[in-house]
Amino acid sequence: MKKILTAILTASIIALSSPAWSNDDALTSNNGGVSSLRGLYEISDVNKAEDLKRVQREQQLIDRNYVQQPPMIPHSIRGYQVNLNANKCLACHSFKNAGEMGATKISVTHFETRSGTTLSDVSPRRYFCLQCHVTQADAKPLVENTFTPVHSLR
Ligand code: HEC
Ligand code: HEC
Image (cartoon, rainbow, N blue to C red; front, side, top):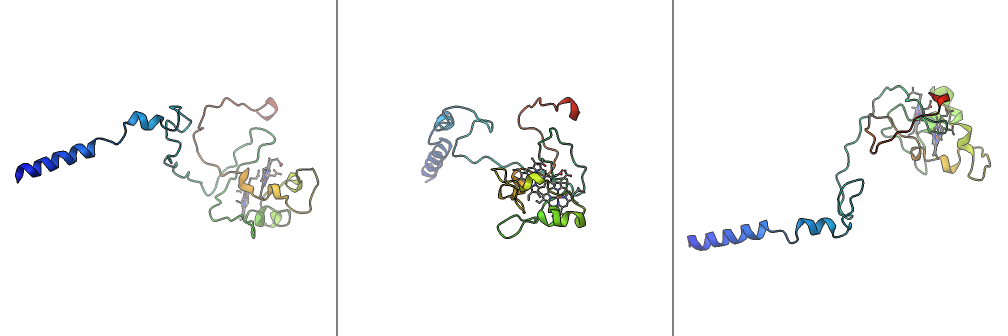
């Protein structure tokens, strides 16, 4: 009896410890062995998401690096919805509300359509604010960047 048990145990240990394919095959089966910015991962693999960065409640606005840069958002935006029915950002940043809320007005470029027509309200292409504006956080650059602003902005 003891012998049979030992045999079963040994067999299952062997079965469990030998993978169905070797690690090397797995790494090259659908990425061609090419490592991307996220590392040598299977294309189908979902890699672990970065932890969310902490956004401070009160912050200094980080200077823009170039004139056309969308300014960063110097405040928390948790719970601010932007969808078909409502745009929380415009509750403070629209021309109508900015004065009262003490917020910066959206600039005139936000009323222009792609073809250069100026509308009487925010242009659809500027409606989803977070497409361009992001909150400020102490985040390490993902890739090295040697960009320096032009002299007049330094
Ligand atoms: C409750 C009012 C309020 C809401 C809602 C709000 N903001 Fe603001 N925002 C402000 C105020 C006030 C400032 C001025 C800077 C400060 O004191 O934080 C500001 C600053 C900014 C700036 C910097 C502008 C500059 O001076 O260059 C950006 C960009 C911005 N907000 C984007 C957004 C976006 C995008 C949303 C929606 C996700 C949003 N804000 C929602 C009040 C608001
Ligand atoms: C397609 C990109 C884009 C979208 C979408 C967009 N912005 Fe901007 N925003 C910019 C750029 C670029 C600037 C700086 C140049 C300019 O004023 O056009 C800017 C400037 C601003 C400023 C500063 C204006 C000033 O006079 O200094 C505020 C405030 C702002 N945006 C708020 C918003 C809000 C609120 C929304 C959503 C309703 C929004 N933006 C949507 C690109 C965008």
